[in-house]
Length: 75
Image (cartoon, rainbow, N blue to C red):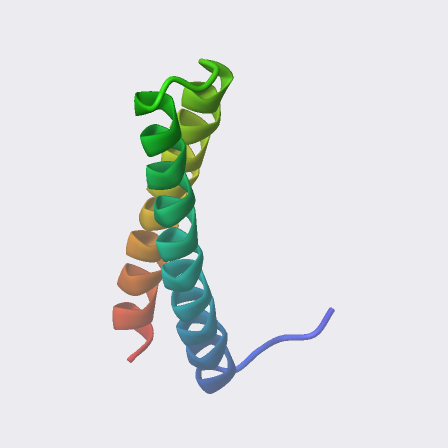
């Protein structure tokens, strides 16, 4: 088992936060496209996909919050 020092943990957390912010943006765009398609009369399955994407966004947002708190503790 390898142990990381604080600097390595900080770098990993920063990269994870940056990655999750980008994925949130992509998921929100896709979710908004699905909602727009639903408004134009597409199948209701699109609404399920949009809800799933928004749920993923909330999950990633909570992960960013937790990682940010841990990052503050390490700095």
